[in-house]
Length: 381
Image (tube, rainbow, N blue to C red; front, side, top):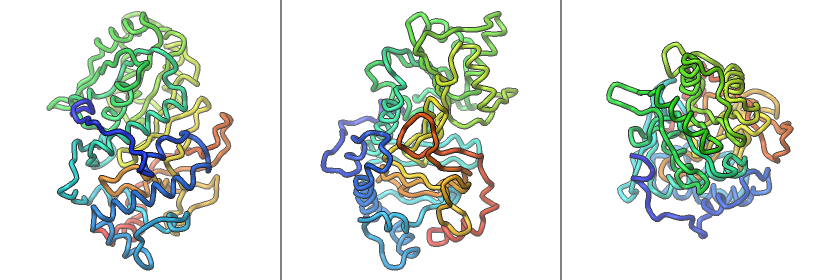
């Protein structure tokens, strides 16, 4: 079920601190701290009412019950859910929560996650990504979107569903075409259709090619095999990739640096026009590379690098596990999660955005942090 099948008349609620957070500039550094605290408070209060098991988890991990958040210190003491533990348990949705979609992760690096969302929370995800796209000037005029993603009519993968919502709602996106679909046998990618779509799209002006890097690389290989050594895209075109750098097709192996070189040379695009999106289905926002290649943290999210043994933030510039606090989801306990992604966080990007940047350094094995997982998950399991 795609977003267009699950949409409602839900709009931003001016009385909601969470929704007000989404109306602020996407990258404002610490300027939105009070708004962020208010949104976190609303999110926590709602989650406690809806998920008694989550409320118990918090109260067992905090000295005294934590029923609200009115200061940054309280947000700091809010216990996170460790991502591997979150993948192995589930929180039963209350009867009065009208779940319209269950977003899933790809599951290519482990067990897939399933995130239940009602119309309100689905729209917040779309609004969050739209805000980042606007701030990064991703769609600066009429464009055709060629999506190297699963058709959202055939999957509930978070990337396909949310990106579809953003593209379908943008007035400057003239058309949206998907080149892959999920079948009963697994993913199906039509290379011939991809080639035809790319050739046709460039005649209409700038192109936004978005999706899995392996699929775009496969389309380039197909074009090269037919004698097309390059396909210059019109000025203003962009290539956005995401979904990790895992192999999607047999025989297609590449890393981000190799892909930038391949796509830049073939499409005649500068590196600043080839950007990666970093995210996970449990997090309701995406971290999109700026023109300098940095993944900046939007104002409706908080990213920290955590020492897994002490469970405390490390100094800026030191490596730790990525911890995310994003007060946008009230249909599932995703307010604060600790991931298995190794990152460094600093503010040394040359693009000038007044926001932290995340520098990923791969993923660690959850087994290595078994003690950490037990500490973080013992009150839930």
